[in-house]
Amino acid sequence: MTAPDQLIATTPVNDRVNLLGLTRQQLETFFIDLGEKRFRAQQVMKWIHHRGVRDFADMTDLSQSLRTRLDEIAEITPPAIAEQHDSQDGTRKWAIAVDGGSLVEAVLIPEGDRATLCVSSQVGCSLDCTFCSTGKQGFQRDLTAAEIIGQVWLAINSYDAWQSGKGRVVTNVVMMGMGEPLLNFDNVVSAMSLMCDDLAYGLSKRKVTLSTSGVVPNLDRLAEWADVSLAVSLHAPNDALRDQIVPINRKYPIERLLASAKAYLNAQTDKKRVVTIEYTLLAGVNDSVEQARELAALLKDYPCKINLIPFNDFPNSGYQRPSGNAVSRFWQVLTDAGFVVTVRTTRGDDIDAACGQLVGEVVDRTRRAERHRAGRGDQTLLESG
Image 1 (cartoon, rainbow, N blue to C red):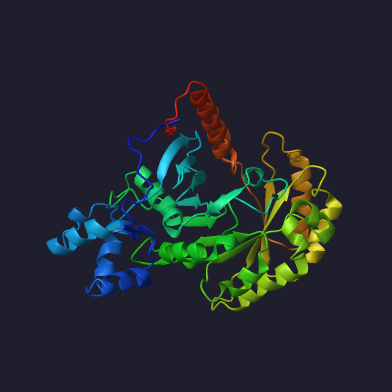
Image 2: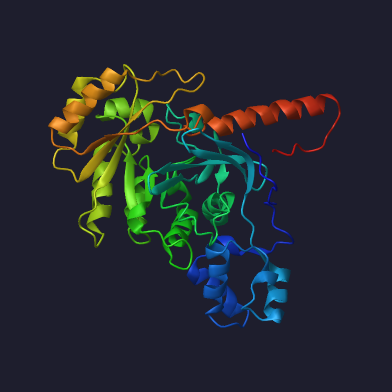
């Protein structure tokens, strides 16, 4: 484990506006309200997202008076790295402290010339999917747009990669970390706008993916605000089983979810897009050959590719990882049916890089330390990291 040299404060000072999470349009409005020209937003966005600059005094193409004014009313404040873990396979995982002392996680997975960042959208999750460690931690709150895009900023900053010639640290972003993105709609849409904005991170809309367990009303309106790639966390071939392991299915069953996802695709100008169907394989629960055939029948003629995810165990989960043979059999049925099927490779095993695991460890350790301090009468807040 490596520790950061400095932790960045997450609490806004004197109610200053955190410019990190403002979209181009929001930042333009901010400067117009200050009596400044619209183009100031472009200048500041480049300083923040292209160069990693947080100090207004270093923004040399702004007037001294504007820099002084910004220092009085605004800030550029990413969340803080509480812990950083590096895997032998190159995966890097962070436990990130957000306002109020809560922790979320982000994971960077390099592969060849790509590096995919898995980003969280909420502190915990309210959907309580039975096989998800994040759901076991409960729901605390939504992340702000600054806390979401701040995970991208921190990932780049942790490699000291601003204009370093090291290549792009983050080439893909997946909204597959802690939380259900569509339950934090406005902040997630703003953050994804920054991910794709050429004045921020300039990612292709194909390389930003939102994953949902099925919040259908917000999925129905997503096309009005975003045109990123879409993944659906299905995990079952029928409603009876999905009702048990993905409880939101009781409200928005599979047929309605798939119809909503297809409508989202149909609203895009790029007609070659498909939905990624995510399917976590649970031994003895949803991994049989018969269930693979049922899934193939369900998705017949549906515009999708399928990503099989062998379950990553966590304490007291109640589930087990399927055997390699079971995964292969499931994959073979779907492949023979004509689907494009991938099996997610396990990465970062040595740092528990499955969603929710690191944060669970940090939370447990923090709580133990807090109880110890309370026992000896020390009321000082624990500082993670």
